[in-house]
Amino acid sequence: MVADPSLEPGDPQAGLLFVDDEVNILKALTRLFRAEPVRVYTAQSGEEALALLESEPIEVIVSDQRMPGLCGVELLAKVRERRPDVLRMMLTGYTNMDVAVDAINQGEVYRLITKPWNDEELRLTIRQALETVRMRREIERLNQITRNQNQALHEVNAALQDMNRTLETKVQERTKEVKQKHRELRLAYISTIRALAEAIDAKDPYTRGHSERVAVYATRIARELGCTNAFIEEIYLAGLLHDIGKIGVPDAVISKPGPLTPEEYDLMREHPAIGGRILESVTFLCDIVPCVRHHHEWYDGSGKGYPGRLKGERIPFGSRIILVADTLEAMSSDRPYRTALSLDAVVKEIERFRWTQFDPVVADAFLALIEREGEGFLETSTRFDIEVFINETGDDA
Image 1 (cartoon, one colour):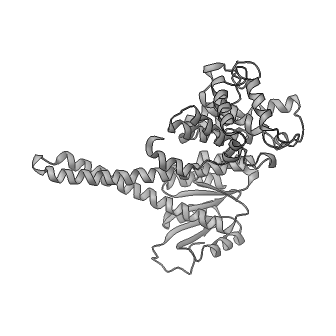
Image 2 (cartoon, helix red, strand yellow):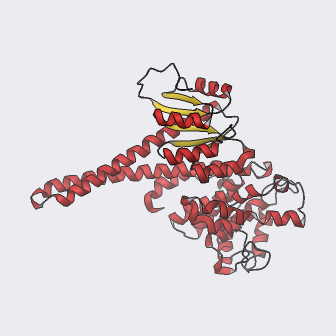
Image 3 (cartoon, helix red, strand yellow):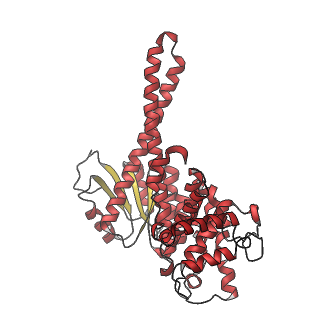
């Protein structure tokens, strides 16, 4: 199949390609985007999609995973090799998170879309994707302009100093625009990470929103400790992805409504190491790998910590913060085997395990926040407005 026949040849609208082996799904997607300013293409196989990419001006591709021949992950990996400028998206479900990780690692997908989709959310996601394509092209155009102008500055002579000053002003303006586009791309990456964290939490109804809350608590503690903006953004991402390794733990263990057996507990203890291995292959997340891998280490280096039994300052600072935030969220939330504990009970637990499980400096920062804010800490620390944070910090983070 090719384009929606309602569009005339030569139409300048952006090209959007849907790939699915089910004709009814392709028809539904075509109808959904008929009123949108896009040229819709459809393909029923990976091979047909690759052929369309060679002949048509495709800017965004949305692929199903399970198809005859090339699967979605393999198709997006080939698209990445042949047409890296095409923005890639994946249709999947919560039960296919291993596939989602492969899509991120091999196809560097922009967004994960769950089935069944919400029509309005899907339209909004596609609009954002097309805007991202436009921004990337604009950034490249502006970068080229900047490079050209910088080269020109080296070639001018002293007699053209007035012209130099004018060109320098233009360069500054262009650079400012590039930085703004860079911030917007950072937000797009963080949106994808949030979606992945939410999908991981959704494996267990009792942990829905867990990763976001841990990330927010961690940023509050980091602010209390006077950490840099760059570190605060890093600890937020680490908080969102600290449990990504649970992808490798059986669902029956994660959602078990009671105490784990020793064998099940050993499986659960593997998740920090699994998470580290997953993130190692994602270039823009490699800095948070140590934080994710060691967020269950005990400060005193006892055998209760894992996976490395690190001690004291050998434990990454971010891991020590995540551990306190994770403990707070776990104890103050309902679980299948118990109801949420009171904030007073959480505070007593943190105080009790200072110097053993928890870094005393991090624990004291948390206790200071609770002493100052009380229950209000849990009520106000529900979501981190990353867009406001990035706009306020600019390129400091």
